[in-house]
Image (cartoon, rainbow, N blue to C red; front, side):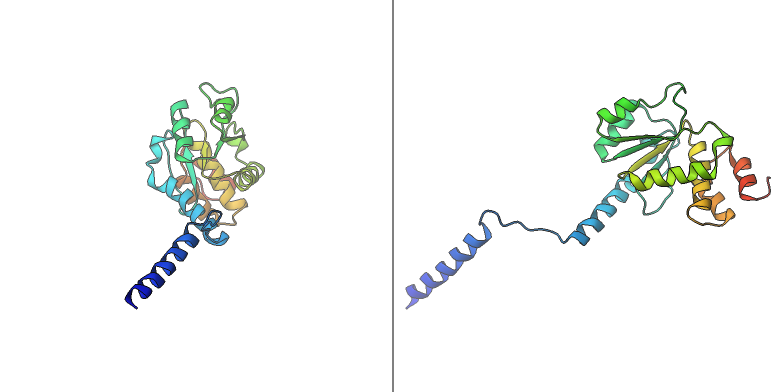
Length: 197
């Protein structure tokens, strides 16, 4: 009787083991859970890294968004960004600027390269802000957005906050400052209808 019981339990154990190890059986995460964890992982890449490691004057100002902003990255920083999982580089510098990002290097690193040239104050416009919003929407994240120092990046994000995201002038100005705007602040203030200090 005892050996019959042992045989019965052995059979059950072997059956369960065979089912668990059967080829073609794959555990999957539900799509919604997968999407959520991917977004969280993208944000974690940005938030856990000291931004200055990848960009001059680097900042990660947008909580919950996988966007790193700042100045000119070196080729080594771009390679490290790729290794950390960054997918897109949006460059606001004019193509002819010295020591600029090489689009071919970005493509060689298998990241998407987007050029959105901002020449100066006259290019900090509603049209360019919408182009930035479109680029962020159309490309894979995490994303690096850079100019030479971070000033143009901050100015354009202020315009995006106002024209695209519907923020108040004061809120949009705060976004621009958080994203690296410095010398362009008077231009942005004037555009937003705020007093120039």
